[in-house]
Image (tube, rainbow, N blue to C red; front, side):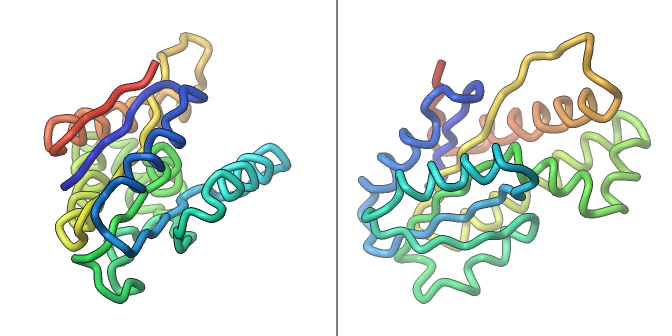
Length: 175
């Protein structure tokens, strides 16, 4: 079962996803954090999320790009629920940390579509290996003031989100 929780930033997606993961019938709970902490604001967000999960029985893994291999860290993947937080970070990490993929993205629409398929496939590959996968993703509005890389990032995330929404078992959107 793959559940996607999607919506704008600061719309309660994380808390909702945690609640969903807590209600799954699996005793082993894992949290895959994809965020790279780059500044004080990022560190505060990580602390806030860790505090919110405290006492809920999640084992946390910090995995910035290779999420499809997370099942190797889990004792019984098929008896586990994984909360993946967040696709927006995963897309940014893939875009900048994997030079070949970044070059592909900048090659035009076909490259962007290929990137989106690759990113979504990583998520679905993990989802096939575990009992339940709860995926958090963000949606951003286009902005004429965005620089070229930010506009590319938003397009890529949007393409990944479309695939996730079309292929997931359950979709929940926040406002």
